[in-house]
Image (cartoon, rainbow, N blue to C red; front, side, top):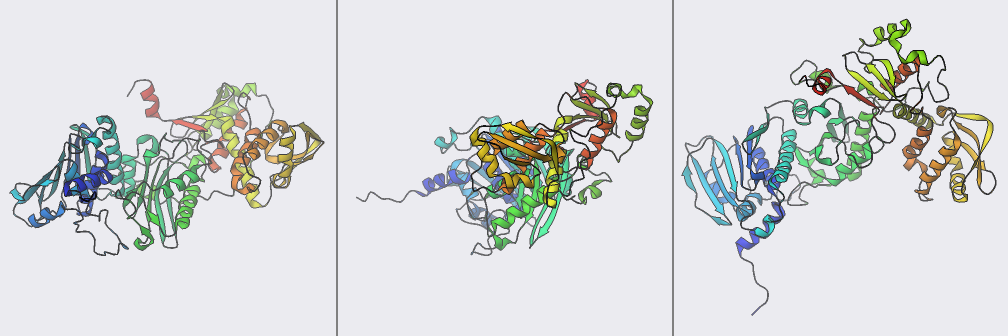
Length: 588
């Protein structure tokens, strides 16, 4: 007898089900996509036991006739493909695998009724065994119920996580689908509890409703078009990040995806403004000509192949970076849904990242008056007048400084009464960083010759690394030369750094160059090198600041690109609204 045999149809379907339906979240995704393809304007998702025990999707789409019901549970039967070359796919589903895969691994019931029919019909599939279609009561649209997911494939079921974790994955899927289709009303229930309910609404309202209150308060609009490619949406200020990419919604041609090309592009765009290991919060929508991408890469259809991946990466990175290039004062809270500010917020122009404003204050240029008197500014008439002038003004979003705490943090009051806290070292580090980078992009960084050249002793390997990059460093305003076998002579420093000590700076730069190959050009690591310099040229924690110094720092933060975080991605400013403070004191 031949050792090769054909597998039974039910076995084939169960094997395929593991690819298409790996967990309840995947089944939820496929069924909601079916509802969207059916033209639904209202979709309800109910899960019990994380979707393992029961998953129900109800929609008011076009529905299916008895004949269509009998076909929909057969593998590779679909109503969505009009072009079998798979070149111009415009629907979310098209492979005809979801329903037979679910039916092979679970107990599936489908009840559906076209809008012009006088009654509904039902069909069931249990472990791959299909029942006959029979008349049934039901409203127009389709109701799909999945019970005992993976009961027929216990090997798969034992690898599922707890119901709570599976519910979290399913919720994330529904949120992304709801973000991609604001023209559809969504309702999600977990174990009988309503998690969220969103009516039909504009995209900006849907994003505000689902992105989370913390992120919605610091969102920036994105909108660009280039060579037939279009990107729009909203990104979160670097001040608010997450530990995983779960809060990233990436939609291509109305299809939510988890595409590595797009995720990498977002990561690169945020690389210089958030801490390592943290992830940005974004809701980005790309419109790409259908024949410019391939969605038939994986059964889950969450990865794509772009015909011109470089153009897509460039568009995402460039548009996100330009949106991030705003001063701290320009990151405004997303308006309340339905309020009069929606239209103006959605149409806010993106401010270009460069040129940055000139940096008037550096560690070597701060005025040195009677600083102690300014620490409690309300005791002096000039300080009180300044607070009275600045605090109510919407032109100064960071408000007026009222005190310095621990010689490190500036306390200010904003126009709306919010309490503003600023880390003076982190903030000034970003200001210095942007000033140096702006000068670099303008042609050259202004240098300040040292009154007496400084000699810095370093290991011979570090001396060699720095001298090999002497020409590049000169373009950044740092002039140095070898001074014997184990020393560097420093003749000039970037003017923006002020009177900084060159020794620690050179050691950090040598460490930075040690991580770079000899062939690596400086421009590819420019931000990292400038960040090293900016850190050493910034005012330190523990430095007492006067009223004028604190006020100048806040004003420059409001106008400086990417000032919400320092060069290492840490936040420079925290803002506590009235409601935030009331919650802290138990008033709400």
